[in-house]
Length: 231
Image (cartoon, rainbow, N blue to C red; front, side, top):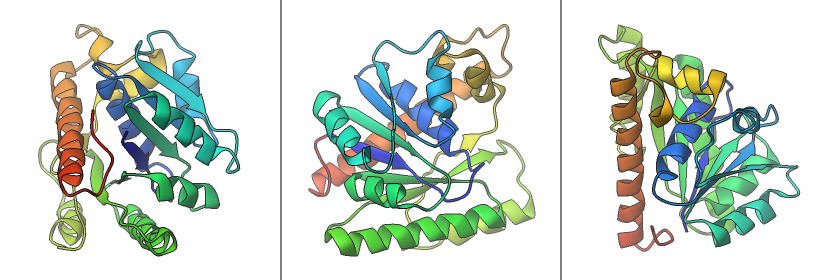
């Protein structure tokens, strides 16, 4: 069963939001586990509020010593396993990446995020050498503007999108009121009240776009015999 790790060595990259959006979307049809390996445990705090999807299990990581066992237990139980990693480079990050079928690298279209994303890519390549297997990864732009982008944002994005060695998602996670709302009141975006949250329809389209593209990438990897079977 696919293990998907969200990794960026810089905090504030949209990592936790993206991981939770995907986990909730997958849990609408398949049992999914999200492992909260961020020391701040933001997803654990979210899960303590009402509205956690029925098919979604939240596991709070205990330490780098337990992460491999937590991944193994979750992957034998549920079709999808999502890991929200801490926002710093660490041994725990390396352990989780070594078990991943896909590493998603969220980043804002900012220079500091770009440098941190490159650091994660280098870490992935080191882990590939250590494990002697290919670890697929892709960059996901987050907190981006749905309309007009700045010249700097376009330039930074092009450095990744135009690089044939780096896979990037077509979909971007836009800055939406709905994505902030779930951390304030709990539950999934699909359960929010459209009369109380601005632009909910666009937020739902955004989440579905992420879910669909992740599934396409996993199926492509399965077809290439580089990943586990996709449910």
